[in-house]
Image 1 (spheres, helix red, strand yellow):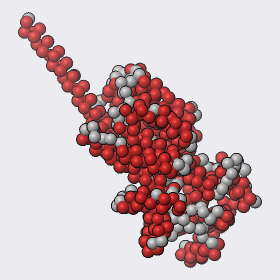
Image 2 (cartoon, rainbow, N blue to C red):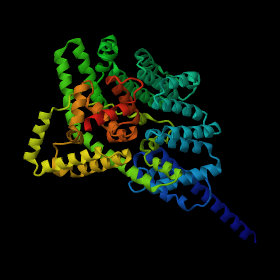
Image 3 (cartoon, rainbow, N blue to C red):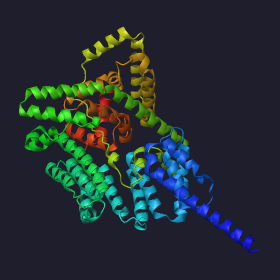
Length: 529
């Protein structure tokens, strides 16, 4: 009898130990996926998640919530898995709400706000930051609320409320600096510099740029020093090129030591910064009277722009596909909840940063690439291009004429939404036919110039300070496209488009009472009329 009792006890103990080991094994897999594989190997992440068997668990447990969160993230980059992404994210939010896991809920709402910010939906982003803040106030993360405050300052920056963003950061400066997370201090000084730069306060922008460099890491661990050191280097590089890029020719020599410090550094590997590097050097040596170095960097700038024209065309194709896919998806969804979930599908950058709440080195990928300043080709040059194309491509003349006719028809459509849909459809058709018609000799910018020659010709003559990128933005604005559409077309961030529009208004000397969109719409109508 005693032997039977002992056997039963042994079996129960063994099963309990096995269950405990199995549970620990699942947690280790989730940790591995979250801390490594989700960033480096999506396929392996999905295999590991599948091996946990958590998809069959009916209980509301934290490991199950983590499973659905990570599964959603792994689907975010896979074509055709949008619905799976939404479904798994909903499950994670539902379980986290039932379990009252404030840390996880704060993270989820924060990432939702990140995606809405990238798409220019700033009001929705602010609503979700408010929710995330409430959850972080009840969470075990002491820095969560401060991170949300820092992000709120970024949203104010995105809304061009630069002084309000500055005030918010300065009001909480002591808390942001004293906190153990050095990211908060670095990010605070970065946005103080960026805000002052937008207000044309060059001296203040330079001061906070130096403050970023002065952030003390002496009390940090070796791993923290490596991470925060990289973060400081990344942001100081971006800030230096931002500041140098807006210095006027007069200010170049006034801030000569700052410019020289940039030029003494090796040419940046980041392709988005290389054009700025050549542009700054060309401007500086021209002002110094060094014609030889000015010509050298000016030629390098021209070569750089030409070599990257084809790549820019590919970016435009991919961006337009995303816009069209997004529009089609929105038509299929009717409820606000589903529309918000669709937006989550575009959290490519934000989702990659959720492993460490505020690892946002890659979030500040600014579209710094600026096209070399040149005037739009004259009518005679356009005719030469047409003759060359007719000689090389059979039937091209008829195709171009058809496109021009369709473009003229678009100007007669009074409904802006219908007009934009027709423009997207026409643009897509041009892209699909590009290989057969143009080979490697044409890109999207040239096509747009040809189809809208009167607009670009008049714009170049009346506003010679506008560069190619400025004129392309003017074209999109005059057609009624939103900042989010323009940013997608040009492979840029919404923030950079807003800044570019502000600078365009200054170059065109538009009075404050006049809206750039209204001005360009009226301007275009006088041409088409």
